[in-house]
Each structure stands twice: as structure tokens, then as C-alpha cells.
Amino acid sequence: MDTNLIITSGCKYIDIDAYASAIAYRELLKKQGTAATASTLATPNRSIPPLILNLKYHLDPAEAPDNAKYIVLDTSNPEFFDKRVTAENLVEIIDHHTGFEGYWQSQKEVKIEIEFIGSVCTIIFERIIASNRVDVLDNDLCKLLIAGILDNTLNLKSSITTDRDRAAYEKLIEIGKISPDWGAEYFAACEAEILKDLETAIKDDIKIEKVGVLPEVIGQIVVQDVNNFAVDEMKTVFKEYPEWLMNVISLKDGKSYLYFGGDGVQNRLEELFSQQCKVDGLLVLDHFLLRKQIMKLARQ
Image 1 (cartoon, one colour):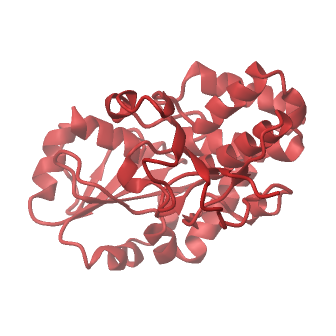
Image 2 (tube, helix red, strand yellow; image 1 turned 90 degrees about the horizontal axis):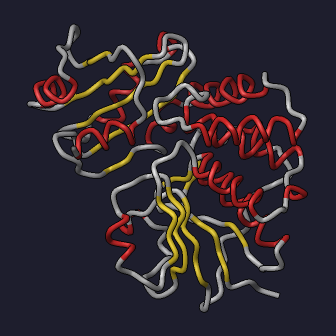
């Protein structure tokens, strides 16, 4: 029997947080007796390496009946919704990017949970626990949720990491009987995929949105060591854009390397972060920030 409830996310790309949380929410709803599928028209980015794709859980085919209803995860900006989603067929939003709460609160027919937390996977884990359906959490599903939490909180070291994210991670490790070393294995797999085809990895994760003084085009890559990052290869991706910003997060030294291009971008970034560039086209922060944190700072 075809389902008419589809869990999805954004329209351009899907990261591990959206991928894992959509699958886990589908599994919870199925355990609760609600027929649901999880699918996307978007391209999976490099945060979903073969290590993840080889687990037993996957997204469903993207076919949808005409009367389908949609749940959107990991974005609440309607401009970025999966192209199948409309105002008429949207029933729920679960997101950890703030900014559109006021808009959706006026749309009374849409259920929302939008809060600034490390990962949507944390929210879905909490729903599983609150529903007393811990039986849904086998080893592979725990790994999916752990990957989403670790990726979005940069191994629980990002300043956006909450006690809820840490608690969810610890409980998932316990429930799934997973080695704490599995997170390092996940990040190594992601970096291998990124460096295999850096240009495509960057293109698959570019966000185009005008926020404050930031360039409209913003990329982000997480690597173990920034010295493995090919700057010239990166710059070829952005040559078509008059202004751009690339956030390269280096886990080894815990810094964000902000590469940029375009007239006036340097002055705006120096003012935003209250520090000077020591190298042309590069501003190095003494800590790392996720792209969403940079965008939130620019909105203030």
C-alpha cells in the first residue's frame, strides 16, 4: 500500500543530519503504526560516505502519490524545501536552524519544532525515547544517529553542542554497543570522500543565501587536517561567483579557515570577526565555527 506521508529535507543537497534523522523518524513512525517513507530529490553530500551507505538503512525511492503529505527536517526556510513540498501538503517541520519560527507560528496547520541545538538527530532520538520505542534503536540505526550528531557538532566540540546532544550521543553508544572510536572512523571516511573529488564535494555543499555582510555564496568542508586541503582546487569552484566564502574546518587544530573572494569581502569579514587577515584571501579564526553559526552572527 502506498504511503502518503513522506519525510524529506532541503532541495539542493542532503547531509548526514538530514539523512539519518529522516530515516530514524521513518522507523519510529512505522513502529508506531504510521506508514511513512523517507526520500529526497536532493544530492547526498560527502558527510554520507560508503561507511554510512553500507549500513542496512537507506532512503526510499522518491516517487510520491499526488495526495502525499510532507514532514521537513533540518531546514525551516521554505525557499530551500524539497521541490515536492508546498504550503498545502506540509504538515510538520523539525529543524535546528533558528530564524523562521515566527513565520511558521502563524501557519497554524503546520506542526513545528524549531530550536537551536546541535543536531536534528538529537531531537529524533529524544522522540524515540519519549515514545518508549528504544526497540527501534539497533546497532545500525544508532550509528546513523551518532554520525549525524558528531558531524553537526564537530565531534561534540562545537560551541553549539548542548548537553542534550552529549546525552543523546552517550546513550546511543550504550544502546548500540558501539565503540567510542567509531566516530573517528566516520570522520576519516568523510575526509577520504572529500579529498577523492574535492571540487564536487564543495559544489554539493554550497549554500546560496544572502545574510548580512556575508557573501551570498558560502561553502563548508570539514577535514581532519587543513594541510590536506587543496586551495587552488577549491578556488576553481568559486571562479564564477563575484563574491564567495569557504569555511574549512580543521579538526586537528580546532580552527576555521575562512577563504574568500570578491571586492570588499575582506573588510566586511574583518569587521564582523573583529580581527585582521594575515594572508590575502584568508581569515583564520582561533576556534572553529559552523557555517550556520557564522550566518547567525551575521544576522545579529
